[in-house]
Amino acid sequence: TFPIIGPDTVNSVRPFTPGSRIAQIRFTYHHDYCELVAAVLSQTFTASVGPRGATNQYARNSLTPDFAAHATVFLRNHTIGVGIDYKRLVPRLVTNKDIKTDTAIGSLAAIAHVALHFERFDWHNKVCFAQNGENLGVLGGYAVHSISSCTDKRTYTNLRSVSMWTELILRTRVEPAIFIAYLKNLGANETIIQSTIDQNNEIEPTVYAFFLDVDHAFRISPRVRWTYKAFVVEGEVEYTRTVYGDIDNKGNVINTHPPVGNFRFLFGLAYYF
Image (cartoon, rainbow, N blue to C red; front, side, top):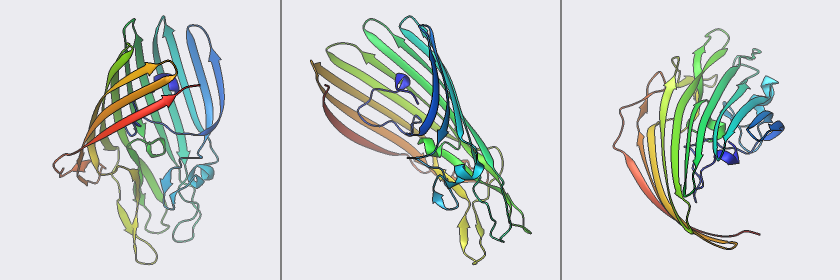
């Protein structure tokens, strides 16, 4: 994510939009009409999950940094942009049968955003498609697709999701705004194995994901913000509605339960200096 395309809500908006603090080496080309960004990334504060839990070991095993690229075009006061992210993980170096393995899984994430800035109001929009977006704070992950009975070598498949949000802000001294977001679980391209029996005859989970049992979720959060010189006072009411269920052999959510909703009331006070 980039600050230029982040929503201006009081509360965090994950998992409806990706965001992560990541050590990186970045090249930026800035012009009056466009900005191009290319970066190599290292998992630090947020790591991918896998057989050993959440750790950056899987990224280190791959000997490949994450790659990201982003392009923004400035059209007077408006901006349009697209971005892409690629990462490669090697979940295991040795199988349960003590055989060397280096099977990897590659994952892509892509975003598109439009921000329209008029004299009295702003309108921001963003959509994100993610394979294995767990370390970016969005719904998804990956799972085992196949297991060799002789060697215990495994192949993997991505669990995918799509999310989108829109935000409308009225630019006045007392500033009302509204944020609306939606995300959807898209499952996997291939069949998944949800668990297996390890060498100790214990059940070993083989799905590594965030919000695995969520079919879809919706959020709406109106807010109001008052600015006086360097002081900002803001309040927000947030309603989130989520549908959970069971997972089938393609990572899709079936047998959904009645929706679960919750309200949050937030108050913020800031002094900028």
